[in-house]
Image 1 (cartoon, rainbow, N blue to C red):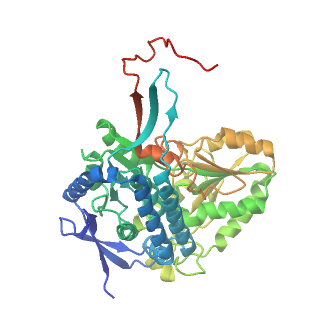
Image 2: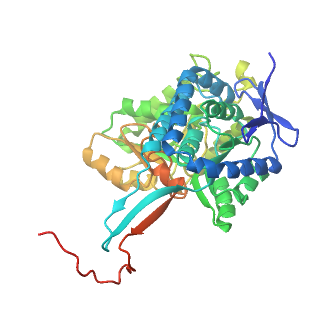
Length: 502
């Protein structure tokens, strides 16, 4: 069977990049090439932005409810193709098939949810302080949005950005991660089939670096929405800030599950295993720290080590697989580099800690689920984002120290606490410096109808999903209509002659 060739989508046409070059899309479980991908240059970014710019004027005038109808149709198409999309996702980036189905479902949920905003882009009508004057606010599109997305949720995260941008009347240039171009192409195909006018959504395939910098600094781009590493987020924020561009960043995390002495230990174990090793730890919300109160720590660690050792590595398409590969050889090397660092600092590997190189696993990028103990809060393994199937256990004396350790990193995305004490739960909810807080659940599992994002170095204050997403992709416009027939000066005139009701 011939390998599929993936192209850019610019101004309603599927086209190769101007370079004529291509690169391989690799299955991380087998090392096999699953597609060839056109490799874009800055000239292709220019063409995509120009097409978006031309389309944006007509698209912003397209009735918002009709925009929503296009998204509803896109959601229906994704629902019908859910299994196909999930299998392609597992093949492209490695997550096990049930998780890939969840990724696709989240994209469907977001598309349906945002489609409804075609009829719900509410503003405010408020009383004016002067007679015969009308005061209201409404949303206005920002223009052209650059959506730069990561590889770990190759369908869900693009829908978080593209769908609200579109329903609000913006045009989009979509730059996906180079590890997951196939799912990006599939999403654009869905929106094309759903009836999106040409030029409104444009796709540029290729690696970051010069391509990403050119997109961020392009004068035709009004807003950059980026999800990825904190280092890259800092870099593009600096570039965009010099140009006074709007930018929304969703960045790294160092999430923790706190287990107190009164917790249901077996329930907490389920949450830790799922949060630490789901998606092979390649989630921004992954639990890479476990903060255990001393009275429960020994039992918890013993059971966690046992659970980690029983997890089966393998191809995510196989039903017996618990943990798939990490996305690439480069990522595998990075994840594993933390093991000797942790040991040098005095920590102990209690489970895993090795790259899998036996049998069919040798062809892919597999790292054993790893539990590290004897970890102190200031160690690198407890402070830096690893983005792999590695979690570090830190012992504390009680709730006060647990919260202090939880908040001791530069990140603030997600956390959870396992406790049967309602007072501890409410203190934790109040004092945790994270954008997501779970009680008696893991650190992953956010739903699209609430804001998603974090504090501190996890982002720049914006939120994805929920109604909060609308504020990222629109400007507020306040409107005053004076029908008094005379000059009225707000905050200065005294209102005279206004008859009040008896």
